[in-house]
Amino acid sequence: MFDWKGFIKRRQEGKIRDAERARDEIRLAFTQRYLNFKTLLSLNDKVLEIINEMEQALEGDQGFGMAFVRSHCTALSVNLFKIIQSLNAITTDRNKNLLTIFDGIWARIDQELKKKKISIQGEWVLPLEAVNKNMADRTGNKMANLGEVKNQVGLPVPEGFVITASAYDCFLEGNQLQDEINRRIQFLEPSDIAQLHETSSEIQKSITNAVLPPELEEAIFSAYQNLINKTGPGTRVSMRSSALGEDAREASFAGQYRSLLSVSPDYLILSYKEILAGKYSVPAMAYRLNKGFLDEDIVMCVGCMAMIQAEAAGVMYSTDPGDGHHPGIIINAVPGLGKSVVDGSLIPDLFIIDRHNTSRIIKKEIQEKTKKFVCDPEEGVCLENLIESEKQTPAITDQQAETLAEMALRLETHFGGPQDIEWSVQADGSFQILQTR
Image (cartoon, rainbow, N blue to C red; front, side, top):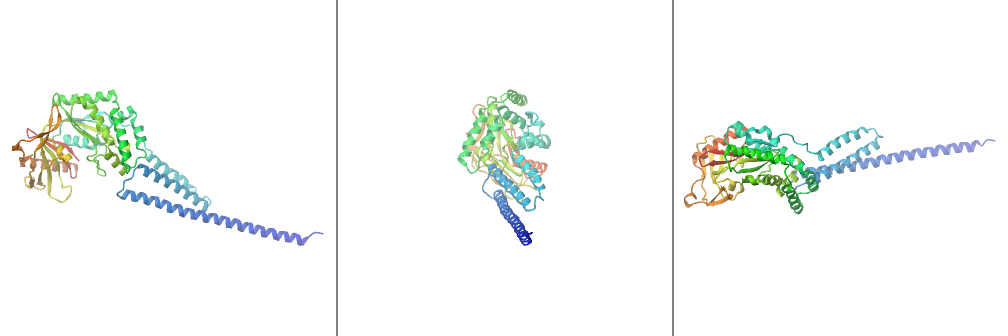
């Protein structure tokens, strides 16, 4: 006889077990979703914390290097990937497309962090008369501006040439230096001064000990020969850094790179390498690390200009850098070369000229002067004592100050903004513009 009571009991117990199993599955699914949601919230807090740290670093006074940028970008990517995983677990993979979007965004970021510089094409050397302000990506801002002054503004500039970004690229590639440099600076932090000094010394030594490709050396000497054909035998040159982005509005590398004066042809190549090596001075490296510049984005060009035997020289500002509403053009002047104004070793004479009437001197302060820098044919740049009658003599005349003020206004008008200008006056009273930015 069939046991109906037992059958019914077993069916009921099965239903109870199925219901309990279903409840357990629902409870487990809910628990997993709840845990994934808690994980998502926790990861979101972590992402916001990382973003906040990056914003504080960007806006704060403390320095940070590329190691900081890379580590925080990596942390962001890991946590965002986990957020997407948690979200898909909660929604049963309804947001799988987010993974594809994430992969695309991270690939772009990773490419930027690991960006390799494209080889720079073009002439290794350019005469200054072939340069204008639109060529800053080949000659650097400093020499591009000087070419513009000479060829478009029509103000006097010393004869010269530019060793270009293509030459810098050729030199690094010929000696396989960029990979070595990247390896040394990869994990540098601007706050580690001892490591900065050690790395700076090692990189600069590698550059100065490297050999220029013969074709590049020949191109530099050929440009120098063309220069002395215009200026006469025995011409020495001033060699100045002209890095890409050196005088850009968003960054200022002023005073961080090297300039060499009165360079003879025998030291032309060594001086070129020393200026390239100056890119890795401690101040320049710390500045780039603090600002987050990629090393390969800062390309060093070098301007070579005929050395001027200046009777007087200095710096002038078309607008007061401390007060843009001040009505005066500020001129600092010293006898001899302007080196002492730039490095602050001597107190210059001061002239302030009315912007609206350059024949009116608003203020004049003449300092007592005991020495001046001169360019000696044998010794190069050296300090020379002034005779007694020269000590109280103004470095420039009032008329020369007024002429300089007019030049400053022309430059400001042409470039569309206030200018910081280096200038010199020769013994015959003629002026030369040495730099404007």
